[in-house]
Amino acid sequence: MNAARRVVRVICAFNGVCAVACGGFMMAGAAGALPALFEGAFSFFNAMVPAIQALPLPAFMTQDLFWPGLALLLVNGVANLVATALFARHDRRARAWALAAGVLLVCWCALELAYLPNAVSAAYFAMGVVQTACSAAMRPRASDLEPGAS
Image 1 (cartoon, rainbow, N blue to C red):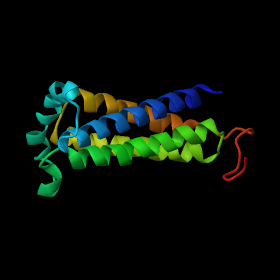
Image 2 (image 1 turned 180 degrees about the vertical axis):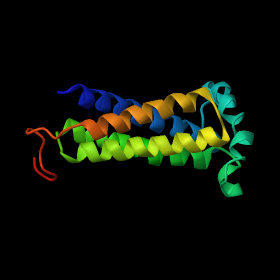
Image 3 (image 1 turned 90 degrees about the vertical axis):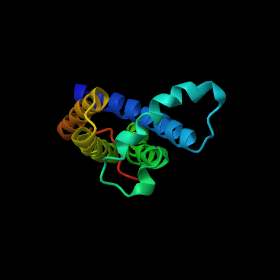
């Protein structure tokens, strides 16, 4: 396995798990469904609500963290987890999914950095650039299966 493929597999798995966990946490907190144990941790996320209201989004999407959490889960989480699953199956479509997930992450973080500059978004932006570059550099392997083959 070449270095670019290893890097992309790790980044996709990491980003997918983190996006699903954080997105789910944001949605549950906004819905008031977090166990008391997590209420203190969620106050950090609640502090972001006034900041996200600066984003060019409809008001109902910025009144709490439900919609940003859902978007995080669906846009970054699903794309990266699909890529991770396809890599595990040696499916040729894994590279395309990883490339799309990397581009989505770069766009997502660029928007965040334009309106809400912060170190976390900058780090994920850099990770998205690495993911995109490594995905673009990957070459298909002979052992990769055609889509739908088992």
